[in-house]
Structure formats: C-alpha cells, structure tokens
Amino acid sequence: MTQPFVHQPLPTRVIFGTGTLTQLGAELERIGARRALVLSTPGRAEAQARAIAASIGERSAGVFAGAVMHTPVEVTESALTVVRERAADALVAFGGGSVTGLGKALALRTDLPQIVLPTTYAGSEMTPVLGEVAAGTKTTRKDPRIQPEIVIYDVELTLSLPAGVSATSGMNAIAHAVEALYARERSPLTSLMAEQGIASLAETLPRIIDRPQDREARAGALYGAWLCGSCLGMVGMALHHKLCHVLGGTFNLPHAETHTIVLPHAAAYNTPAAEPAMARAARALGTADAAGGLYDLAGRLGARQALRDLGMPESGIEETVRRTMADPYWNPRPLEAEALRELLAKAWHGERPSLAG
Image (cartoon, rainbow, N blue to C red; front, side):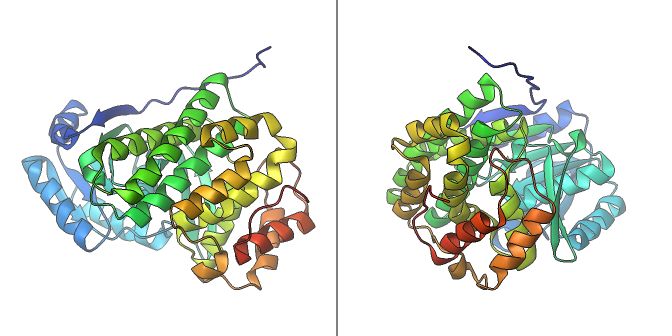
C-alpha cells in the first residue's frame, strides 16, 4: 500500500538538449531581463563566460568571475557590489556547483531571476538549497528565492569536463538521489526519479571515463544529474549531506570529492534503518549491496576514496563528530557518536564500508 505523502513540484523551467545555449537570449527576453550579469570561476571558464556575455549583446551586464568553492560570504558580498554597480536585473550562472552557489546567494539577497548553464553533473541547480561558509562554518538554508527560474542543459558544455571531475561530480549527484530515497519528505515520484537518476549515472559515468567525448554518455549523465538534483530539491537532506557540509566548511575539502568518499559510508550507516530505500539504490546500481556498490563505482571511476587524501587531518574526526551531533539533520537512523567515529575512520582511511555498527 502506498504511504501517505505530500509532493511539492519545483517551478524551474528546464531546457535540455544539445546546442541549447543558443536559446539563452530568448530566455532572457522571455523573463524581461535587460542587463544580465554572467557569473563564472576564474581562468578558462572566465573566457567562456565572456563569450557567452558577448553572445547576448545589449542584454549583457558583463562578467563576474570570482566564484569559488563553498560560497564564502565575502565573495558573495564582492559580487553583490558588482551587481549594484552595473544595475544587473538577472543572473546567468555558467559553470558547476560553485558558480551555481554564488548565483543562489545573490538571488537570496536580491531576488533577481537566475538562469543556470551547468557544465558539471552537480545537480544543485535544481534545488532551493544554498550552502554558505562564514568564519569556517558552513550553514545551509532553504528558500524559494534560491530556486533558479531557468536551467539550460547543453550537452556541448560538458564535453570539455575532465573525466576525473566528471566522475566525482556525478557521484555528488548520486548522493542527492540516495538521500532522496530515504528522505522523510519522499514521495512516489521523487523515489522514481532518484532510482532512475542513480541508474543513468551508474551506467554512463564509466563510459565517460573510457571515452570522454562520448556524447550519448554525456547526455545520459546530464539527464541523470537533472533527475538527482530535482528529487533532492523536493525533499530534505540527512546524514550524508550534514557530514559533507561539516567536512567542507571546517577543513575546506573539495566538495564533489568529499561527497564521493563519504557516500558509501553514510549509505552503510543508514541501511539498517532504510532497507527498502537501499534496496532500490542497489537495484539502480546493479548490485546486491548499495553501500558496497557505491564504493565499487567510485573505484571503477578512479576517484579518491580516502578523506586523508584530500588533506583532512585524522584529528579532525572528533571535531566532525562534535559538529554533526551539535546540529544534526533529520536522519532515518539516530545519530550515535561512536558509530559516527567508526564511519569517519573508515572514510578517512579509504576502507570498504561496513553495514555493522
């Protein structure tokens, strides 16, 4: 029998395909934008962002190329100054999760409409969730103003994404779906989307590692990222995301790689309390054990599997447990300090996850 549920669809307009970047000008016109500020990270992405800004002609308010990982509030304040100086009336975020996060932070403060042009498989463009870092602490908030109005998925924009980054970016998206499967706010639709999103990424990410220019695989991964991000946008987060937010904010660890390493261990922790959800995840992965399947997938993709390899000190395990327990997210299994220490120790060493404990 279907359990009672509440389902809240997302309002984001999604344009998906190949060559869809050409529709940016028409979408800006559709929302009445006259001066759109293009956001990006520095370096090669900035050059691409300037080309995008040039392509929209008089509707461009230029480029701000200062986005960085974890959305520090001081970077947001710098970008906010540029928004005001150039009288921008819309935001175009070109890039991965760091750029999307900056666009969301600006939208929260200004209520300007956002158009996101994803270049990775983060999936965060489909959520009303923002994570920000201030004074070494990462906090998250959920607000309708954070939800982007338009997302333009163009497979062509992902072809230059290095295979290794594709792998961890895709694992980050899978993490959204795994948590959505056992979320308190899940519905039949979010569970369907989550399972298909996991399956799509699990099938296409290895192909991208082997053949980075495989357009069909790239399209499948981008489709999976959309599904995973969408289902997370409609539910809440649990232990996995809490751990990653604490680790990222406290130790400035790379976002996608941290998700990749922690995910199998968080799945193992929650499996005893969420067996039906984990069975669906295992089915999507084509394995009998979701936690082991996630660990094996990360290994197949050549991703790093130990937190120590990201620069986290072993002494940070205790601080992570303390911060996680002090302000926990809802989780299907109650948080136990000793069990969390064991989880983090395995993740720090890169050991295979265990369902015990």
